[in-house]
Image 1 (cartoon, rainbow, N blue to C red):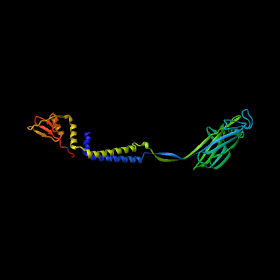
Image 2: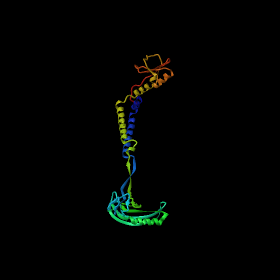
Image 3: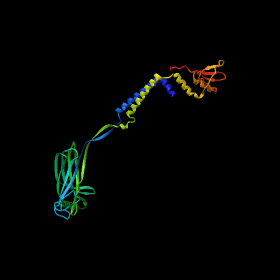
Image 4: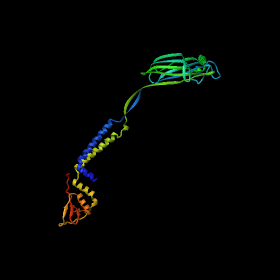
Length: 333
């Protein structure tokens, strides 16, 4: 504490100036970090659109069976009896958001022969094509004579023989213009025939569109030191600088007295209080500083005696009396 008091008593204005400069730096850093936060780039999807293509199927029973009466409509059934020979399939292309500027859907019956996963023969029989504009959905219903398809499939399988596998499916293909995007979505609904039954899958598919936009956003949580903390530090430094100046002007102690107290504290282990009687006949050697007097005491293996009444510090030896007298109080450096 004495060292700090001595420093402030001697260099108070300079210390206040340094603190003021640091306060300004803290305020500047707070302002800069507040207006220049850490940032990161994020990508947003704009104008998101989706086109979906889904199948719906139904068949009407035309003959009484033990399971169904005539006229029963089977909607998306797992299997369909041969007594419901006409299969109505409706592929529908739809938009989830905007309307189609234009859309065309084509439905085709596709026979194909494959071997080891590769198609080596295809026959397409067009069923229907529809076109529309400014609409959210377009359905293209078709009616399929399953008995005729069954016969053709049997013929193609006989012709292909063991060279491959022949299958048949309803294929829907839709091309469209949607909210600035051009696209195509395709799906297949396989037909499978058994003895007295057949079935058709009702799959669906979708195609998504969007426009990516990259933007820079602040990330306040990534700051090492928040602006408020830097601002608080600046306030603390400014108040400290003002306090140092006020103390220096109003309460600054004598620099010599502070220095004396500092030296006394430093060499306190070598100093003892006492009463030194005057000795007019002895030799008196005045030394310049208390530190010099302590050096003398160390050299002669003695102690420094502080006479509080006279204010002198004395080292007594047989040959001489070594004395240090503190200077009068002064505020000069």
